[in-house]
Length: 195
Ligand SMILES: Nc1nc2c(ncn2[C@@H]2O[C@H](COP(=O)(O)OP(=O)(O)O)[C@@H](O)[C@H]2O)c(=O)[nH]1
Ligand SMILES: [Mg+2]
Image (cartoon, helix red, strand yellow):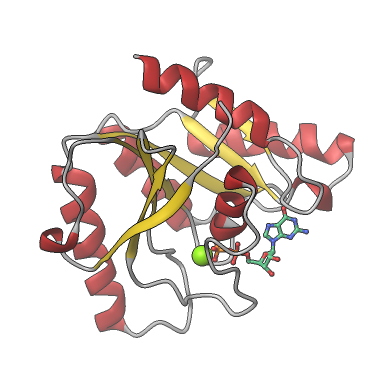
């Protein structure tokens, strides 16, 4: 797949603000600062379709991007921002549940994990939750440029183990800085969208 067209279609905090459920959706989940916006820009070859932020915890909405007029990438709000207030965290949970549990056209959730670190407790919880709803199976390891080839292999194995990935579950390392790995991810999107 080549992404020729990408546009922000809707910014939502509640279901009434979602776009119509007429296109297949692939959502991105991960902790704040993991590199979700950067990955979106890399995939769409746009410098600032999604805002890349130096300070974590800014995205508090569900952002729907229409791709090639044929499917959507959905940027979910990041979790694990230490400075977020309790009420904000609660609001986050409700917003996520409403989307993840009821969205008929949601095909899969891509879980993003920073390749440098062991998955956090929240990463593991998020992945368990995705498994429960049958939305799991695709993990993107971000910031691959920050580790050596040796560490990449070692950390991939460690992360796969922490999340309890099975042999059919994919992990794809990407680097927004070096612009690597996204082509493989797009190929996986192709096969998901064909199903
Ligand atoms: N070195 C490196 N830095 C990255 C990469 N992806 C994101 N970053 C940096 O990580 C920070 C958070 O990125 P952002 O895309 O805003 O993360 P988000 O909060 O998950 O949307 C920014 O400073 C990015 O420049 C990557 O692949 N390599
Ligand atoms: Mg972001």
